Every structure is written in structure tokens, then in C-alpha cells.
Length: 95
Image (cartoon, rainbow, N blue to C red; front, side, top):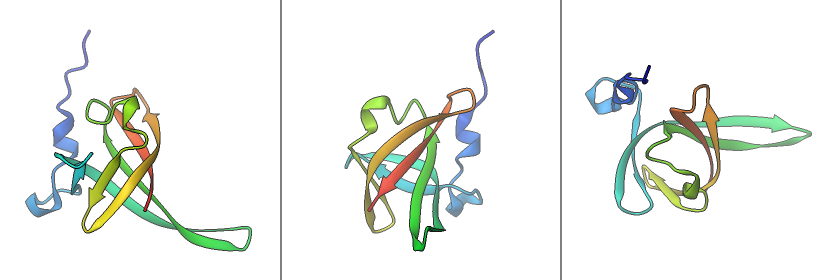
């Protein structure tokens, strides 16, 4: 049985009443991602750890090293981890 869920239903932009942020992948491709810039404090060091959740079909393994523009900040994709069944991926980002 093939997976038939419409993944776009989870990535509705905030401007349309959803939770996703608009972005630009690799300088040209418009994308919708769930973006979080969580504050971390470990071993006496503090900072943020930006991450984005997106569709695996949009962010292939080759996405690591490419850019993701969110708002006015351009991030480099440092890591890509499949989430659950692999339809979505968690991208670790560096500004």
C-alpha cells in the first residue's frame, strides 16, 4: 500500500492560517518549512540551534551544504535527519 497523505496540508503558511514559514532553498526554490530557533544552554554555553522541518522530497541528501533563506537570514544546511517514516526531514542550520 502506497503512502497517499497530502504532506502540503502540514505545511500551510502562517499567512494562510497555518504554522509554516516561507523560505527559499538553494537560492531559487520557494519552500514551506516549520522553523524553530530554540534557545539552548549547555555546559555553561548558551545560544540558539536553528532547525527546520520540511518535506524529504524537497530536501534530498544533497541539500547538506546548500542554503535556506528564512526571513532575512540565510542559513547553511548542516545536517538532514529523516523523521519517523522519512516523509519529512529535520534540517540543522547555521547562520
